[in-house]
Image 1: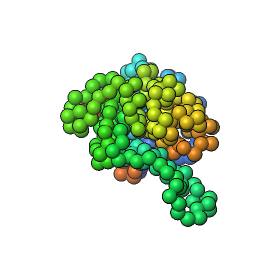
Image 2: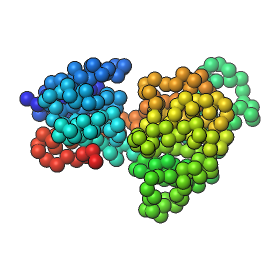
Image 3: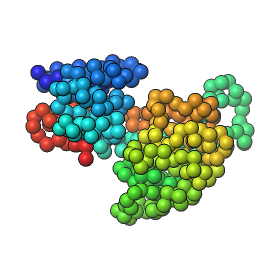
Image 4: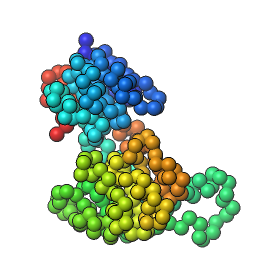
Length: 318
């Protein structure tokens, strides 16, 4: 019988699709994430590996799984999987693009608002019992309406963030390796070089995949090009930002604030960031709505069933 190993628990709707067709083994629910040794042990007898973000499927994991015939992830990104090693073995890999776009855009905009208006600081102040009454100078933040938003990466999530910005009558600039004429026409946004975007934007929101060209795309030099009043938001991948450089920039007033949902060495967070008030920190929850997470899990199961039935894969990694 086909053995499907799911590295962490997923919504039951997805597991119910697989159980009638295979032996389904589900990894432990509680953090910490599986170690490299634990991942190799889980994969050892797997025919199909159903992986989650943070469960690294590297070349050693793939080499330790002689029966492995397919890898599916419920994520929209696949940087945790060694695609080259899988292809060398002829193992197809699927992912789940397009499902979390709207929800992640909501999360990105929520982070932008919280950082701009200092909501995190204000809530901590109130919970600490320090609120003694209203004053006109308490937690003054920045207006989002009519400000300039710079979107780095005009993919599916970037487009949804641009749509939300229009509701706030924001001027939207975007940077991408490839210019998106259709998005410019549909959304009324303007293309800019990365340097110009950083210099002119009041808010910068990152929506690029993690690749060699995007690792530390936002480093100390990039941060110095931003306005001192600027806010940086990252809901893409942690290593896109040099986390230590960002922490120092926030500490030193190089930029005003940040909102982060992802981290460079996740789940570890740069210690200096934890000491700062002018950053909103979330534990990778930008796509965390119950309907979206269920659709992600089901899509991975659908890809697995298509593979088992000998049908074309719905979402093969390009």
